[in-house]
Image 1 (cartoon, rainbow, N blue to C red):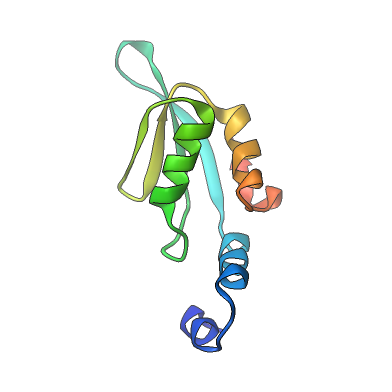
Image 2: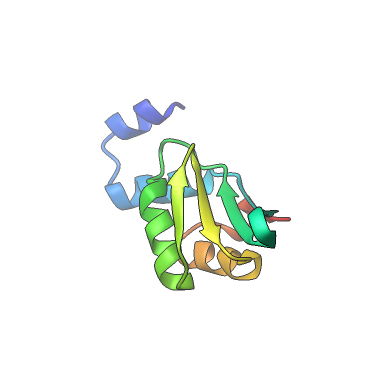
Length: 100
């Protein structure tokens, strides 16, 4: 079934959000930037999930700066251990989150 069919089937928004979150394949990794600073990259979201809102939630719960650009979330600092816990609290299944 396609996403358009499911949306037109009259499913409640809460159920649609749950289905969309289960289909994600999220990768969490770090990169070193200038002057040896770490940046945590969270990517793999498709268009059915509001990644900008997730970015805002992650920055708030992790008390860090960051941005959403080019389809991925960039958080200042090494937050690999905490990002998985926060994403599961936001409703993403633990199996769909790959932390490198």
